[in-house]
Length: 291
Image (cartoon, rainbow, N blue to C red; front, side):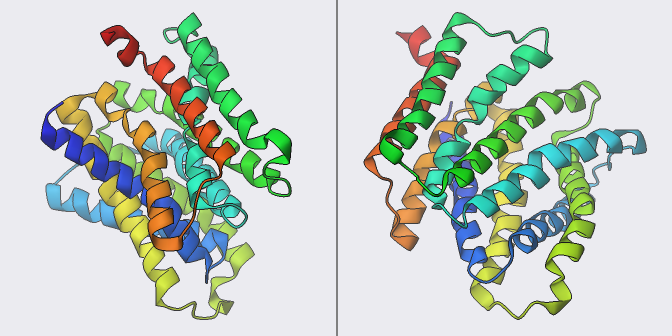
């Protein structure tokens, strides 16, 4: 990859890693579903404006049922689970568990596809990933917050399901930008009635500017701008290169959490992160092919 591609990749990791920081700041004054709906609703509006400015075609009507599923799996479910979990654990730890997404993707692809079966090397990577999760639980680690760990793993599994489901959009000729717009629009529509019933936003007190700006950051930076950078890297360097962002997100999230909120990962959490990243390296395979 070129130097400019690496710069974009690190920028993307900061934007996606920053979503965990924005979640914590937003939760200081807003309910969980309000944070999530604000993120997807505003992101949909921004991406619609980008599509109009570029003269891009909106998704055809026949694609919307599939986009509804994509919005559920790639936005509504994981965003909600991570926000709920971050009421109990730090964003740095949530980002570590988010790194399990490629591990789950290997398992989902093995079951759901004919061309991405589990190989011995990938099997080793899966084992290392789950060993990392177990390391975090060793000696009673995370006692009292294990439901939050399960929620983060559920979010990672939902992302994995979305990655396999999303293969159909490229085959159908839907552009990446249209897919991004479609999924956040679909997730906004899906979550709107749930948000209105459970959070009753008309009765909420003004939370202050910090939580509101955090939601704006989630929508504009960690969603809309992040998608645009993601697709640019995808076009310039390819899918293999852009997958490296998985290794960088926990580093960015932990760094931002330490810099802004003073958060630190415990030793067992660092050990778990090391095992998960080792598993991702085995699954990715490039390091070993070069050696």
